[in-house]
Image (cartoon, rainbow, N blue to C red; front, side, top):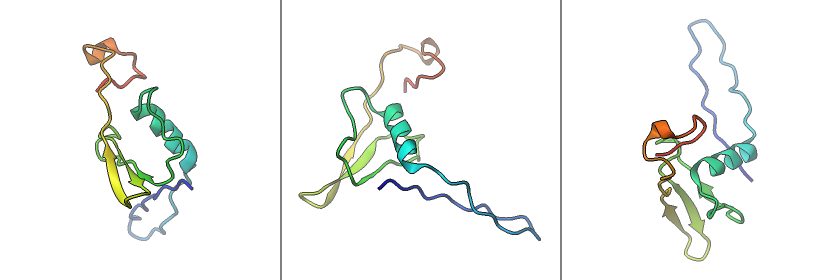
Length: 95
């Protein structure tokens, strides 16, 4: 089951806090997978994983190895389709 933790914003003085917008976590994970993996890598069958937004999702992900019970890091492979970022389409991330 995919889930996402949304932070509440601090309300202004005299205002009431309101819940953050709902997120479709499964769709969000599918979008992130398409952003940071190549066509030779997928997350099919991975039930326990962490994808950190710290570096705009570009630093990789951690998956739980069910056999050892330890988290295993996978670094995001470089995308070298473009020599310079300006050679990429605006929708591509060539970092």
